[in-house]
Amino acid sequence: MSQPSQPDTVQARDALVALRAEVGKAIVGNDAAVTGLIVALLCRGHVLLEGVPGVAKTLLVRTLAAALDLSTARIQFTPDLMPGDVTGSLVYDSHSAEFSFRQGPVFTNLLLADEINRTPPKTQSSLLEAMEERQVSVDGKPRPLPDPFVVIATQNPVEYEGTYPLPEAQLDRFLLKLSIPLPSREDEIGVVARHAAGFDPRDLAAAGVRPVVSAAQLEAARAAAARVAVGVEVAGYTVDLCRATRASPAVRLGVSPRGATALMSAARAWAWLSGRDYVTPDDIKTVARPTLRHRVELLPEAELEGATPDGVLDQVLASVAVPR
Image 1 (tube, rainbow, N blue to C red):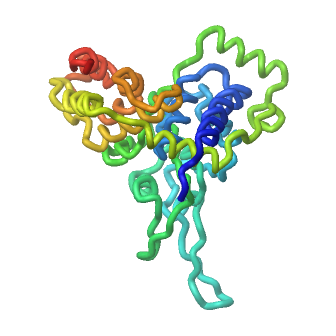
Image 2: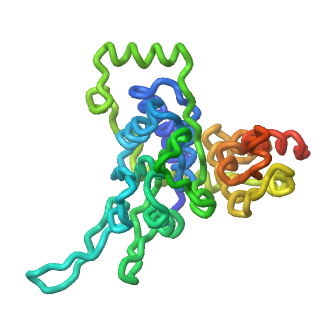
Image 3: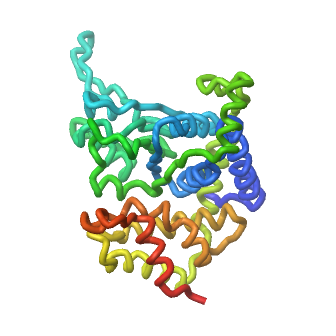
């Protein structure tokens, strides 16, 4: 396969910049979350969105999907959802007297896993193979998923009744964990004003949201981000940050080597979006919290004392020497 030309790379970056503006037609604020989702698209990574009800987590993903020329599907995770409802299952055909495979909603480019922590671990685990291997196995036969394939899952951090927290193994498969905060007063006024003017979140086409990034442009952008150079000192800094989380007295489980590679991948995407072909320590710092916060498990006594993963990461970033 030939490498994308320089103009193709520039056009791809321009298309992703236009993607932010297109999402802004329906979403007020949340620029950091939008950028995080674009970084995940560039890295072929998955995203966990966490926020209280009513902060437009689902609308954000639906708007992103509408602005991409990709197939999308949504799964509303519930306590009675079965693994076959996600991956698909074998169905008996009485006419041919044979079993045929009926694809589940996971066979798409952009999968919205809404309220993923409301379904039992058995169904949650049905996404493990899909997220890591980009395939699902039914009846012993592996079936490849489309490329690109990105899972964007949402969860509510304040409602615990009837929920099933994601296990560490599955959390580690998400490239980023993005927190969606309550909007500022100005942004909330903007939201109310849009609705007063007739904005309907169920009709994104009426809001003017159109596909602005093609599959070819996304592939060109991914290839360009993968060519971003990483110096030996920056690679060492990345490893030192991850190793420092394992030595923190407040941490039961620190960042794994997979987390270190995820941090480097996210930093490359951030550097490319910033117009550079090399990674700096500042790039690592910028993406460290969203890339690592869900990979740090605190000791119970540390949590009782008010420690948080972001707080631990702040201490690590302040203590590890930055290469010059």
